[in-house]
Every structure is written in structure tokens, then in C-alpha cells.
Image (tube, rainbow, N blue to C red; front, side, top):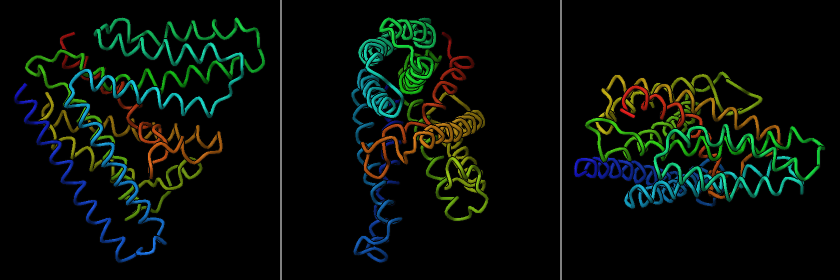
Length: 316
């Protein structure tokens, strides 16, 4: 436990150091290029940096609070994300019972099962039981208009916002020989690598981006940004091997996998936003849009990361 605490402190100090440097750069750029707030790019950059300060502090507090704090944090994130998702889907009065069940039964039960470390149940609770019972609850209201679309959208919301997101704190349930009491560092590894990949793809894209990779989904994403961001984040993941049970090569390969999944997660969620005609999922986080706008890459990478680690490194 002492080693885990020391590693976590070093990691947090490093993150704060990066944020301090970013804040100083943002301040200098604002003073020189946007003293009156007219430069939208710089103002957006500083808003994002401020938002990251808030998010890092909240995550840090959750980590300090231990297992309960982490599970409660992600349960709240799932609730907020599910609320954002539901505001953009096709629902009717007949769906209210099903939605209530999603928020106040399925979500808390999923996180309780995580707390109880019941892998055999929480791994299938939503994709099997919730997927079967949600349409039963909805159909009892007797409204069949666009029924398939309505129930499928609610199921998809649960899958993304609750099931996939819950695999981040699920990392705490893994039993890895020689790594006891340090699982919170796996969460830090996952979040840092995936989020840095997003940032670095943006930076590489701004510096060298020319070839649009998916212009209809996300005009700002380029091939150059994608390659630069994924390679950079994978190298950073390899450099963070010391907080994981992996070798540097294993850490780099896992970082590569989760950054790829994170990229495609961002594309999928962008496609949903385009389909709904909105730019952001919400306005919860200044400079970042909604919570799903920050979770999209993490929720797609978390289940893959969890199961790879469970299969190759965990004894249960």
C-alpha cells in the first residue's frame, strides 16, 4: 500500500506539473494574442485548461478516498452521462417507467455488484438482464409507435454510459499477484493514456494535420494528428510501466490498443451527435462540452483494457 501511495503521489505531482506549465503557456498566449478575449482558439484553450484543473482535483479526491470514492465518482459520471444521452434520444411518455428503471435500478445495481466484486453478474447484468427487461417494462405501456427505435436507443445509452463506464472502477476488482493494493494506478494509467491521446491528436493535428480522416464526422481529426497522437500516447504509456504490473513493452502495446479504441469511440459518439444535429453532448464542463464529450474515448477503451488485463494478468 505504501508503494502504491508513493507512486500515486508521484503521478499526481507530475500531472499537476503539466497543468501548471499549460496554465502558464495559456496565460502568456492570452496576454500577447488575446488580451481582449477576441482569439477564440486561445480562449477555448484556457477554458479547457481550467476545466482540466477541476477534473483532476475531483479525480484526485476520489483516489484519496479509496475504493468507495472511485466507485461513487464513476457512478455519478454514469448518471450524468446517461442524463445527457437521454436528452438526445427519441422517448415518449410510455418510456418513463423504463427510463426510471435505467436511472434508479439498473445503474445503482451495476455499481453495487462492482462493490461486491461479483464479476459473474456485473459482466452480464446490463447486456443480458437489463436488455431483456427494459423492453418488457416499456411494452407494458402499450405504445408501439417507433418502439424498436425507442427501446434500442435506451439500451444503447445504458451500454455506453453505465456498462462501459463501469469497467473503469471494475479494474479495482482484479486480483493481480504482486500488485495487491495498487489497482487504482491501473485506472490512472487508463485515463491518463487515453486522455493524453486525445490531446496529442489535437496538437499534432494543429501542427501538421492536412489529410482529413473523417470529415463528415469530425472535421478537426486528421491522419497526421491520429498517427502522431496514438504513437506519442503509446510511448507515454510505455514510460508509465512503473505504475502497472506490465513490462515497458506490454504497457506500450496496451496503450496502443486503448488509444485506438479511444479514437474510434470518439468517432462513434461524434456520429451520434451529427445524427442529432448537436455540437456537444451538453454544457456541464466549460470548454469541454458535456461529460460524454470527455468520456467517449474512455468508455470505449475501458472494457477492452479491463478484459485484457483480467485475462492475461489477473488470477480471477
